[in-house]
Each structure stands twice: as structure tokens, then as C-alpha cells.
Amino acid sequence: MDNKSVSKELKKELFYEKKNGLLTADQAEIDKAEQYCAGYKAFLNSAKTEREAVKSAIEIAEKKGFKPFDYTKKYKSGDKVYFNNRQKTVAFAVIGKEPVQNGVNITAAHIDSPRLDLKPNPLYEEIELGLFKTHYYGGIRKYQWPTVPLALHGVFALKNGEVINVCIGEDESDPKFVVNDLLPHLATEQSKRTLADGIKGEELNVLIGSRPFKDDEGSELVKLNLLKILNEKYGITEADFLSAELEIVPAFKSCDIGLDRSMIGSYGQDDRVCAYPALTAITDIKSPVKTAVTILADKEEIGSCGNTGLESDFLTHVIGDLAKMQNGDTTIALRNSKCLSADVNAGLDPTFQDVYERKNACRLNYGVVVTKYTGARGKSGTSDASAEYVAEIREMLDKNNIIWQTGELGKVDIGGGGTVAVYIANKGVDVVDLGVPVLSMHAPFETTAKLDVYMCYRTMYVFMQG
Ligand code: MN
Ligand code: MN
Image 1 (cartoon, rainbow, N blue to C red):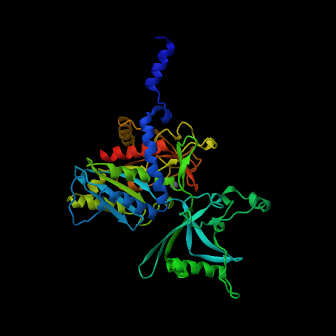
Image 2 (tube, helix red, strand yellow; image 1 turned 90 degrees about the vertical axis):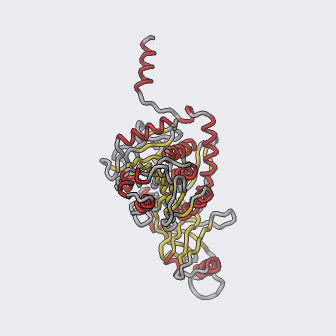
Image 3 (cartoon, protein in one colour; image 1 turned 60 degrees about the vertical axis):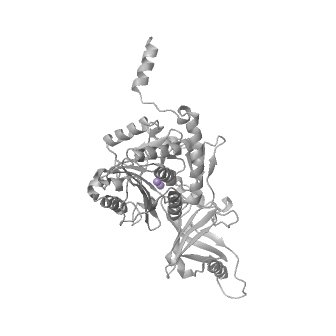
């Protein structure tokens, strides 16, 4: 061998090199990814809010034999149950061959996404136009939300206990809503604002009508007409907005992106792009070795707080219920448990590469991304998975021929972020972040690659099947 081929051989042996997954995967795998993503795109359209995601997920799971957990029952290996937490967070479990006390394999994703929530008292009229006041939810870039077709989703909870579902703007024949922006001709002053202030929070007002109630006297006739429409459709009055959860989300549907159809564009892929793989994996596994749990959580985008967020004891209670059903101990079960915190990472963007550190940024089509730590500045606020646990996950991914990569959230000191990993780590569980690279994360329309979505599903499947 000459020197050149010696060094080539040695490099092959010693270097860590990543290749584009579409160049290394066989065609059958790429075809499976295409098929799998058809289901994912449908899920995106049926689950734009956490409540709709819980409803859709339960519908999918019930078809595969999942039943609401009943603490008076004894479940055996292979049995499938779910825990519905206030219609906004749901946990699914498949009972393992080993006792729950030996540990549970948990996949955790979130089903809330950045959006505009209606304020408790939202409806008003200004210059004979009807509008909603909103309060944005999660980390949005406010300038992205004007002049985008919007839909209204959510519930009115009435004093008599009745809950009325609302969904306007999704059907082809439905009206849509919009936040206005200035025309360039009059935007000289506005254009001097920083991008962060381009549109301010109190300017995210949603246009919902302009037709006055036909009467030649009286004020607020547009508002009156709008309330009349809502009253006829839902039986509500203005006071019922006080006990409502109404969310403004983009009205467009998921679709393929690119001439080659290799990518998916949609609202809410952070984090349905991990929630759907976690859900479909747990509904596909059969009699796992360890008990498998998939949790689809609310409130991640605002810090996982509240009784439907993962900072709450809900997950502890779920594992406790499963352990106690076998006369096992909750603490021991948690201590022996492992988790994939399934969340997205920032895919390297061709136009804005300077905020990424290329050696450690994740890329579209390079597979599912393992993120050892998130956090900001000096890793502040991250759980930072142990080397030992990451080694275990590496072994699992390689053994199963899963296309994967590592990722970090941008250059050091450029920004940062967090996931649910830290709250699960706090329970004494081994946890690492693993998910899908996304372009334009938190925008009204986010982009992912189909191969990465499918690799996320395959990872969730092998992790929980055991
Ligand atoms: Mn996320
Ligand atoms: Mn997010």
C-alpha cells in the first residue's frame, strides 16, 4: 500500500464523519419514510393545538387497543393503557414483561406550539371594524404573524359545565382571520424599529369582521353583529370569553416542500414532529421487555409549568400508578427508568449559517439528532446527559442502522434554549434530548426533512420495544 491509501484507511478507521442520509439509506428506507410522512402530515392538520393533539392521539391509540387506565385493575404484559390529563397532556403505556419497578422506557414530546392566545376580554370594535386582542404564547418572532391567514381553535367552558369546541378557518369553506401590517408607503417610521419591535405585542390584533348590525342608531354595531353570529353558532355571550381557551394559529395545511418533495412544511412541527413518532412507535410496539411510556405534554413552550406541564408530578403519578398496580415502588421505578426527551433542534440554515457552529450543528437529511445538552451561555439550565447514557443510545442507534447525528443549539453565547429533559432528569431518570432538525423553528410555517422524521420514529420504536 502506498502512503496515500494508508492514510485513507487510517482516516476511515479513526475519523468520525457524517454523510447525508439520503446518500447512505437504501431506496426501500427512503420509500418507507415517504409513506410514514403521509400519516404525519395528516396528524399535523388534525392537531394544531394541545387539546386537538390529545384528541387525535387518543383516537389513533384507541384503534390500536389502548384503554383509559383503571387503578382498580391488574394489567399484564402487552396491555395498553392511557392517562388523559385535563385534555391537554396524555400518557400512553404498554405493560412490559419485566416489572415496572425495573424501570420504564419513556419517550416525551410536547404538543403545544407558539401561537396567539385570545385575551380573557378580547372582543372590541375600532373604526367600525371588529377585532380580537391577543396575548402571544411561547417564543414567537412577532413580525412573522401579520398578513398570514389565521384560524381560531379552542373551547368555551360555560358556567353550567358544558365545554364547547371551536374550530373556524380550517375547512375550505371557512372564513379566515388576519393580523394587519402597514403598507410600505406609510411604514417609514415603523421600518426604523428593530426587528424585535417590528410588530409589538399589543399590535397583534386579529381582524374578525366589518359588517354592522343593521340599525340606524347605537354604537358598536359591528361588535354586536359578531356576538350575534357567535351566539347563534355556539350559544355564547361576551362574558363566556372569560372562561375560554381560544388560540389563533395559522390556517394553512401541511404540505411537501421542494421540487423533489423531500421536505415537509407546516405550522406546529415543533414538537409534533417528535410527538407523532413517539405516538406511532408506542402504538406499534408489541409486548416490550420493559414497560414503555409515551408522554405528550402541554406547556413546554412557556417553561413546562402548570398541572399539564412536565414540571408537574403527572409523569411521576403515571409511573407510580403503574408500579403500584404490581405492588412495586414508585421511587425505585423512576431511578431505574430511561427517557428520550423528544424535541427538535435548529437545523443548519443555508442563509444564516453564521449563528451556527458547523461542526456541531445538525443538518436536514442527516437523520435523528442527539442533543447531549441545551441551555444558554455556560450550559445554564440544561440537564446535560451523562457520557454513559449517550454511549448506550449510540450503541442502540448504530446496532439498528438508524441514521443519526448530534446537534447543538447554535454557537456558544449566541442564544440557547431548553426542553423538558431537565424536568424528567429531576425525577432521577436518565434522559437525553433526541429529535428532528427544523428550519424556521417557531415560525408560523416550519420545515423538516422526511428522512429525519422517519428516523425519529424508528428510534422511538427500538427504544421502547427494548
Ligand atoms: Mn420543542
Ligand atoms: Mn419550541
